[in-house]
Image (cartoon, rainbow, N blue to C red; front, side, top):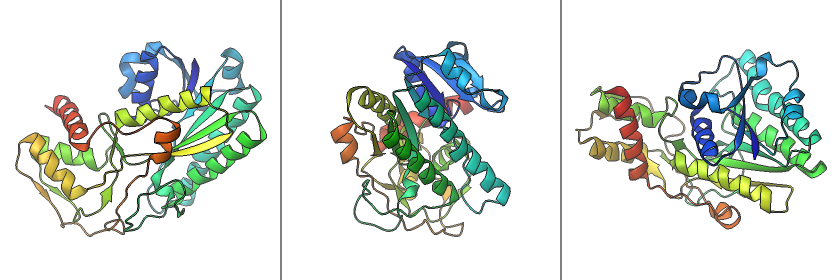
Length: 311
């Protein structure tokens, strides 16, 4: 299949690109000229690459290739309190650009559009029940608002044209080549023997290993090819939640080093009491997807990657 992918230089996208190439798909990578390609350096020659900020006509790609599927992973992310300029940037990258891509894809009879969402769209509290696709929404920040806005646009196109749409709502992905998030930060502190100060670490999240995340995109492609539908969305995450405190203990065992993370040294945030569990029942039923990697195995693979990279 010919697949156009955005965000292919990022953490999740780079792993997905490698997997799609192994499965013999032809990939067209749409990226910004300033994107860092270090994650996919070894496979760049196997990709058809276009720089969207230097492209005069986005339609030219669809005219040149008979694209079957678009996978949208690219996003502009800011966690808290964006400036007006940053709001404009998020609107552009998270709403305007994918909408343009979707509009062109629908005109050129592309079969399906796979969108990437986030569990931050749901109401986050100290809940006892896992989060399902029917759980109430309460966007965590402005970034999440833009993700919800584009999903509504995608629904509109799917209902009013022949393109099929899927949104995968991801729960706390982690693994090799990750961004500078909490798990790599903790792992690096152990590898480099540097003390790390954190909050109490009581928040619990559904950490989901990158290989399982990639599996979900592969199953979504199959779903689009084989099922009759207009639009659907699926939670993609582990049904096991772990606190930061628990992760530190697991990483300490993996590293065989004494814990050097100082909990409670930083003021707790509003997220400290959340307990996020993913209900992936819908994905299991319709996508034939489930998380296969337990957190100890996933952290072990992640630790090994960073150890080899840093030592």
